Structure formats: C-alpha cells, structure tokens
Image (cartoon, rainbow, N blue to C red; front, side, top):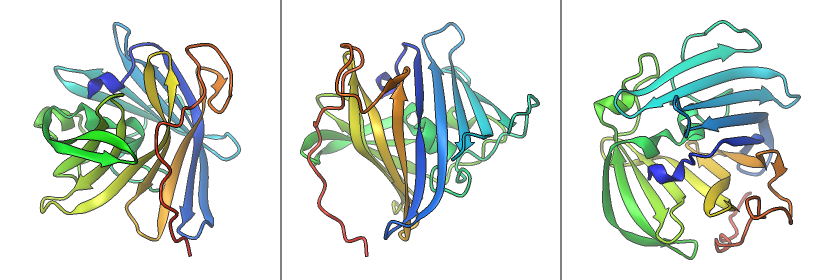
Length: 240
C-alpha cells in the first residue's frame, strides 16, 4: 500500500469543510501539503490555515522505515517548535485528524488481505491493517484509538476507496470515503475525501490544486489530467 505515496515531488492545496448532516457549515479551513518522499531525507509538511488563509498549525513528518516517523509541530507563524499534538484528535474542531490527513495507517506494517468486495462499481481488495509498536514510536503523538483499520484498495488502479477504523471489539468507530480521484501521469491520486465519526456531521477534504494546477481543469499536460469518472455515483442520501 505504500505505493500510494508518490516519490515525485508533490504540492497540494485544498479546503476542509465540516458540516452538519443537513448541510449547515460548522467550520471552514484551508490546507497545504508538501511531499518530498523521493529525497535522501524524505519529508511531508502539512499546513492548516483558516478560511482567510491565516496560518494556524504546521505538522512536519520525517518517515524512517527502520524507526517509524519523527514529528515536529509549529503554531501560527512562530518558528519555534510546539508540542506535537495527538495525531488522532480532531484538527481545529473538525472531524479530520492529522492521521486522516496523512493517511498514516497505510504505513502500518501488519497487513492481511481478508477478501475482495465491490465498492462503487470497483473490485477491491479488503485489507486489514493493525499498528506494530514501531508504527506508533514517535513520542507525544498519542495512542491510536484503532485496534485495526479495514481498507478497500482498488484491484486495478491501486488506490484506496474506503477505510474503517475499528475498536478492540471490531466495531466501526470511524469511516473515511474517497469521493473522487485524479490521474497524474500513470498515478491515481485522491481528490475528495469525507470522514465521519459523529453521525450528526461530516467533514470533507477537497484538493483544489496539485503542483500549482487547478484540479478541476479540463485540459493540461499528460501529467496533469482532469479527474476521470472511474467511480460509480453514490446513492442519494437523506440529508434531512
């Protein structure tokens, strides 16, 4: 599943919208992601801004296959390090956590294919992943609330379509859905994700720009193609 993380330099910009079930917005944020996973010292930097672009938080991650990930955090425009937050706590009163934003569970090393299932017209491998001690090695990041995460991976295109966080009794405590995807060259990337842990509300993360290009554009180079409709439409949900 680590193949979902590109080695080429990637810069993303987008929006986070938390809303009640019937559509009333509760919180609006902006985010930026800077991925440099193919460099000698790989890193990913996540930035959270308010709706006006004012900087709120930054989380920097330095992945190390042997030691797990090292984390550092900054608040606002300060250059001083702040305490690393619990990665499984909500970001700025939304349903999105740092663990959701980073899809960190895809790096967990204990993984088993448990079957196959169709999701939105796509045949998927169903993979159960659980954290090894090295996956949660960074001090101060908070213990994971998940005993395991069930992940649906598209068999043909190899991107994640859905994930469910499970407690020690196997009960679903959190769900993450991929709503749309975008193709960059030969790689498919997530464009829209929704997360729900509270049945009364959801939080949607939408990627607006990839490497400086509007992700909704209809043209562009081979490496910056428009989103393709590879996912079947979802059933209309009751939003009353």
